[in-house]
Amino acid sequence: MKTIFDKETRDGLITRINAVNENSQPQWGKMNVYQMLKHCTLSDEMYLGITHYKRAFIGRLFGKVALKSMLKDDSPLAKNNPTVPQCKVTEESGDI
Image (cartoon, rainbow, N blue to C red; front, side, top):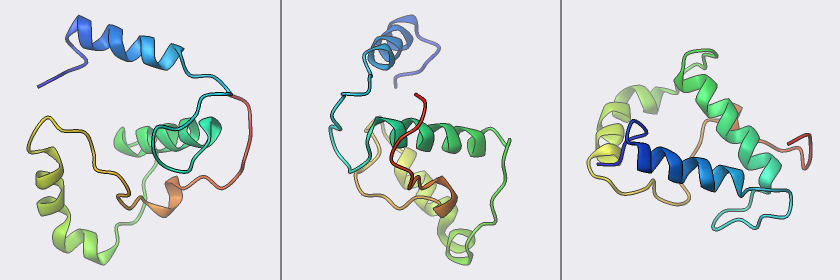
C-alpha cells in the first residue's frame, strides 16, 4: 500500500501538485482547478477535525460499511462518489 511516509510516494505527489496551474484540464469530473483545490482544502479540514458537519442519517446507518469497502485495497476512490454538501464548491474562480 502506498503511503505518504514513503519518500518516493511523497515526492511523486509533490511533483503532481506542483504541476497544477490555472490551465490544467481535469482528468475526470467537472470542477476547474480552483474548485478542485478548494474542495480538497474543505475536505482536509473536515478530515482533520477543524470543521465539523452534521452526519446524515443514512451515513450513521451505513457509514462504517461504506468506509471499509472504499479503503479495503490500494485502488483510488471511484468516480462520481457523493460528497458532503458543505464541500461542494460553486464559485467559478478565486485565488489559487
